[in-house]
Image 1: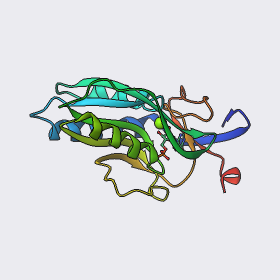
Image 2 (image 1 turned 45 degrees about the horizontal axis):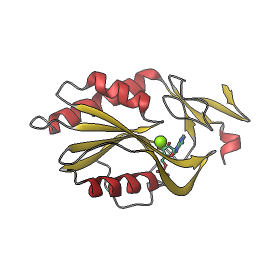
Image 3 (image 1 turned 120 degrees about the vertical axis):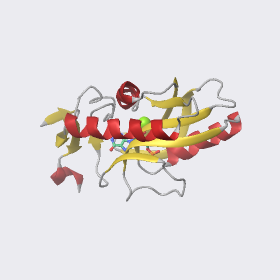
Image 4 (image 1 turned 180 degrees about the vertical axis):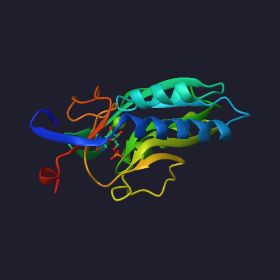
Length: 179
Ligand code: IMP
Ligand code: MG
């Protein structure tokens, strides 16, 4: 059990499960990009740990960049997405967006608009987690690690109001408080 601010979280996914999923994603992506040098575009802050492990398992040539967006306050999406740090020049690049988790999809929709305006050669989306029940968009998510129920999780880069990103496993909000 961990307590972050006012809420209690219980263990949900262990390191072995996470590493297995990240390794599989890296191998799938690598197989699809044998003739290309993709740019992995990490969405800060949440994706930093996932991207770091993904890169350790990725055996082809690739570049890495980051952009910073914000849509969440507390444990729910505000619906408004703002860009806090631009991605740099991605014109003509084959971009793979790396997200920690896709919830409503607002963040993704925003980043895809940005990529189209930048004139990228292609883009795909990789997310370690997807909450299918919360996802409201039609945009395909090309690489999904683990589908989870519509519960709030922390750890492995994901936070609750800034805390919990450094926990190496995934914890979920204690169920009696979550319903
Ligand atoms: P969306 O824009 O609603 O898809 O939300 C995506 C972003 O919200 C993610 O990149 C996370 O930063 C954050 N988020 C969504 N669900 C969770 C969660 O369960 N725990 C922590 N952060 C979350
Ligand atoms: Mg995020």
